[in-house]
Length: 253
Image (cartoon, rainbow, N blue to C red; front, side, top):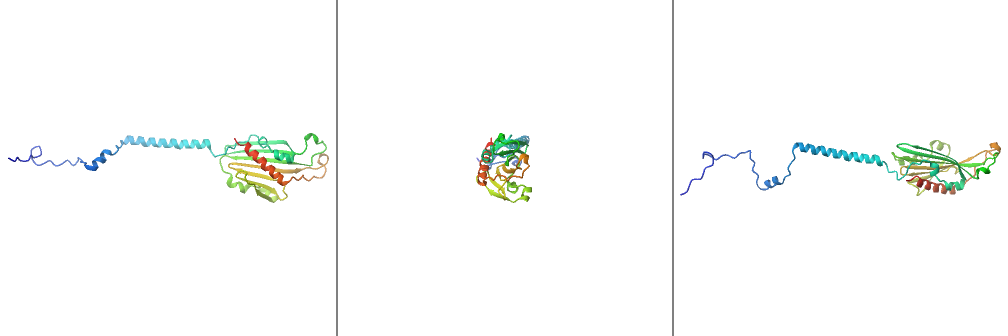
């Protein structure tokens, strides 16, 4: 005997309609649901975001601290406490005479360090000069060294080779000196006197200038002025380059 199919429902009435609040997931959708990462609660998400911001701030602050500690690349150059000691000038001394009366100066600031030396070179020994007779000529050698710790001097280096006041008085000749720093120039006046060698190397700027001086002849300078002794320009150029290389090496750490 064939029995009647069982009817669903509590009272055997019509079948109960499915609850639409229930979601039935089948097939690939079910697999994706099972493999999907669990999203953290809202409070946890806020903590994660705050932690990321803190880490980013710490990285930024660390980079800024490292920049403040290192600053610009000075290529090992340091301040010169006494430029008259760091500037040996032995090659110039061979041509112009012994060094006398060195006068150094130094100034250290946060953005720039500056050092200066003025030294007299005169042939003969001091005790060989009598009280009533003075040497007819001597040379004054001026050395400058500037270390730019904040700004790059390269864009303005070529434009400021010669002093503005001096350029109005005499014509200046400029010669490029190869293989010395980044850029190096030798400036002389039209007569070949007062040569100045100027060098740019990174943040460091150097200059050595030779000024030929003369004084009056006779007791206590009462006679006519004497002409300064002319030094071979080629030999003077070689001496300037040699002494400049020694100076640049001396002020490196």
